[in-house]
Each structure stands twice: as structure tokens, then as C-alpha cells.
Amino acid sequence: RKEVEQDPGPFNVPEGATVAFNCTYSNSASQSFFWYRQDCRKEPKLLMSVYSSGNEDGRFTAQLNRASQYISLLIRDSKLSDSATYLCVVNGRSSYKLIFGSGTRLLVRP
Amino acid sequence: ETGVTQTPRHLVMGMTNKKSLKCEQHLGHNAMYWYKQSAKKPLELMFVYNFKEQTENNSVPSRFSPECPNSSHLFLHLHTLQPEDSALYLCASSQEEEGSSGANVLTFGAGSRLTVL
Image 1 (spheres, rainbow over the protein chains, first blue to last red):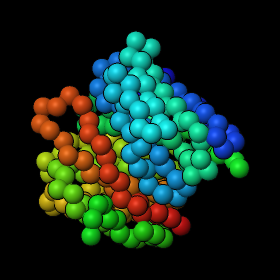
Image 2: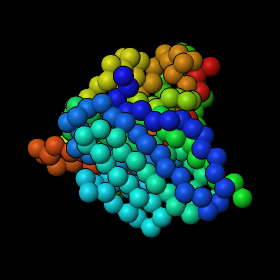
Image 3: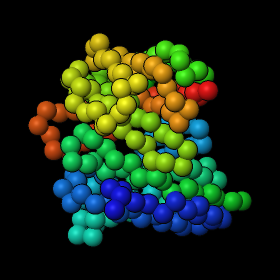
């Protein structure tokens, strides 16, 4: 089983749609969870950290389910500029070692 | 300059060449990382330097040799690489707390795109 698993997509949605991605992780001791965004041929950039109680940043909502070992990202009112690959990131056995998922590709069409 | 800067941005080398990738962070962070990103594969952690000590070597072949002379600079020395080593090499930094059980946010450089002929 991969340490961090994501549906690769692509998710192809119209502008204004709501889209959700899930990510599962294997290490029950993981403490840190993030969503990063990576545009084509660019470096990953932090989108948001994921907190135990769930958190929201504008159109983006992240949730953590420790019992089922998954995190989710919800994007409301999708914009064309949201088109990117979304990387689920979880810390591994070493606290500072972040494990990246393969990413979920999102395409928002006009 | 701000953030994490990597040079060169693009590098083409033959299998017998020796080259180095350079990374510099201007964020005052105490941990630096090398990641490898190949097409259609997740980022792979190669090396971690935490408080200037190498704390992780993820079974990386010896043809890759890291160097961290201080907390702001990180190098990746390349020697007799193979074509399958062609990838995007990303440097990152973070501020880590001793004894912490969690990991902190990584700030990435723009990457060095390496092609091995």
C-alpha cells in the first residue's frame, strides 16, 4: 500500500462547479497534513495546512478524518485559475519527512 | 533575493560529466531538502539536512552527493549519472523545532531540470 494515495484524475469541471478530492494515508501516527498546489512545470506551493477540526480558506475547505485516515479538499465556485495538480502531503515515520501523493489533476473549463 | 533560489534552472549533461546543483534559502530556516520529481511520479525525498546535519538519505545512489556547508546553502553534486536520472530536482527549506512530532511547511525553489544524455 502506498504511504499516500490520491486519485490522479483528471477532474474536468466547468467554472463555478464544486469539486472534492480525497487522499488516504497509511501511517496512523502522522501528525501533519497539507495540501500543496503545483502548476505545470512549476514548483509545489502550499495551498493550506489541514487541522484536526477542519479549516476553511475562502473557497477552499480541508477536512481530516483520523479514524479512516483520509484528508479531503473541497473547492467551491471553481475558477479557471484553479486548474493545477493538487498534492496531498503527510508526514511520515520521521516527523520532518513529508510524503507526497502523486497528485490529483484539476481542469476547470469555461 | 527572497525565498529559495536554485541554480542552474536547466542542465544538460553527459553520463561522464560532473556537475553541481546549488540551492540557497533566504528565509532563515534550519532544515533543507532535496527532492526528485520524475514524470508521472510523486516527489521523492532524497536528502534532508536538519540543523546542518544530514538526517536522511533515502537510499539514494552514490552518484548523487549532497553538501550542506551552512544552514542557508545546499548543493547536490552529480557524477556519472544515468539517463533515468533525468528529472526535476527541487530544493526546499523549512523551520523545524527540536523534539517536535510534526513537520512544518516546506518552501520550494523553482527547481533544476536535469537532462542526462
